[in-house]
Length: 434
Ligand code: NAD
Image 1 (cartoon, protein in one colour):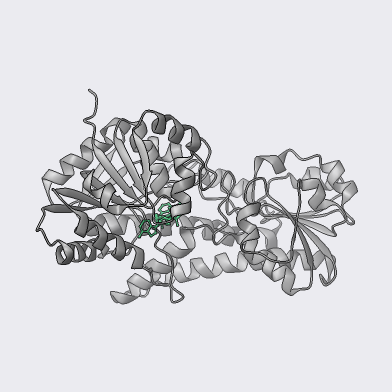
Image 2 (image 1 turned 90 degrees about the vertical axis):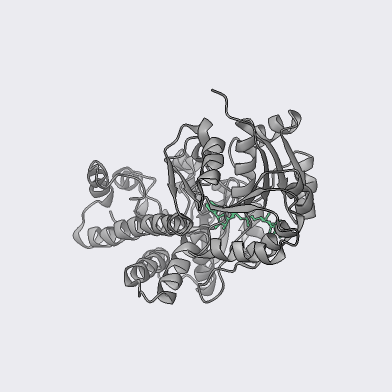
């Protein structure tokens, strides 16, 4: 049975908003996407994507030409022509770890003022528990025509780099509601995905998002702690992780030892959860340790390099990988940025290469040489650090890399190479936890 087509408005055309809008159009809805960034909207209208995400451009183009997907800077236009409105604006971290909800508040006010008939307002951005209540209050306060509305919490679990797949084939869809009426509307919207749909109240849905992301960081820091023990014992963490992963109770995902987690979600979401817990009277010590282990993973990479090269001052270091994970150009909170800054503090000269993220990195890091390919980053460098596990790096010509390096030193922050083979090739090679 075909799903009933809905008129949907998405506010915020970032990774989450644009992917959600494009995919909801793809499954048959009429979607209008709003962003306050006029330049971004102008590009989108021309079919130019604001960021790299595999498969996204094709879906956007197809649905724009079918007139199922459009873009505007006007919240009013978006709200008036839609029944379901998603708030997908950014929720950055304040210096004290709290979530900055200024964009969510502004959008809630704009929605309230533009409402002309019953609206479903969906909190899609990642927000602290109880934000749903605040959105509701803000809308009530600015709802001058007393229009009926419902609030929904529908947290997003997409993975950058495979965001279309995460949206189209989600492990589950979580919907936090206060009435059966809106539960039915949201269930109908997501029905074409054939995914398990979990209906809860709003606060539970908000908490599910915190609990999920924080658990993922827990897994990463756990395997990194195991990696540290492996290094002391001469055991290979990859074998340990592989074997642990076979256990249904554990699972293999997020058990990759390395330079630690980064990106626009995990670091800020953990900090926010610690902060929220504190506010409601719980000291979440476990997550504080997770953060500590993650910070020290980044420092260890530089320590390993110093262990081989001694002083870094005046030496040249090549970096492969800037994005926080492969298949994205996103460098927000990427471990590469911290590592580059540490190396610069030590007086090293830096050459970097990334297949997609160099334009974004140029806005953040200064004084580094941006290279055209991995070989240019290796040329004349005293050592090479691998920070992102792009497929392109897994297939480089290692003998050519060895010839180009001043010293055959590779610190592999993502364990993409086999240590035995690297030794055979004559590299001074160190991975993580092996
Ligand atoms: P983003 O920063 O890439 O995009 C946010 C967009 O909102 C920007 O284009 C900005 O111009 C726009 N915006 C801000 N204020 C606006 C306003 N008043 N009116 C209209 N547009 C406005 O953010 P993102 O990565 O898409 O994340 C959005 C939310 O989803 C955040 O809460 C984030 O934590 C959460 N989230 C992100 C991911 C991810 O992988 N990126 C995954 C799950 C959840």
